[in-house]
Length: 214
Figure: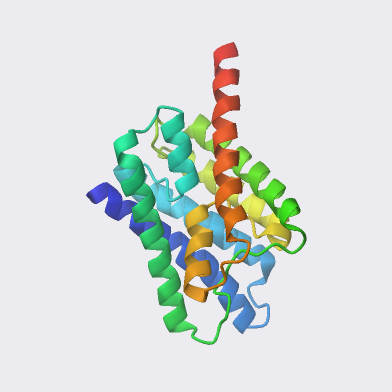
């Protein structure tokens, strides 16, 4: 149970800080800036990995948990409880932000700036590279260690920095599901669920192939 609680707390922190930065940037007319939002997401992920990685493995992302399961680094019986914990933590964060900022309509929802296909491809590629880094720095299914938090947080920051204005750079179904449900903006949500999961799974396939060659 402590692992599930850790996953809920970590996902809460990432969604609360990350989407909170988006909301406050809107409320303050750009005081945080896009760069600030990207840094917030990256640092939130990094901090939670260092804080909770030794307890739950610091997945905080259904796509990551599914990919670890397919890679046979994570027990199948824990898959659903982990994903449930992540989504509960994310929704709790969006509900808290709704309470704090009742006039904000989107609550940091991820929405494509262009076509759905454009954002789908971007989310797929972004999550592919994120998962590839995770697979190579994680110990089994645990994102922990001296450099794991720094490496993974840096990838999140980098990808949010350049792709955020186009696709939102979610890379995490829980991060997109929560504000979409609480703000009742479910249009385009499917791509922020399917694309990250598909990208993470593809990363496992490539990682296994590369590992077999070495």
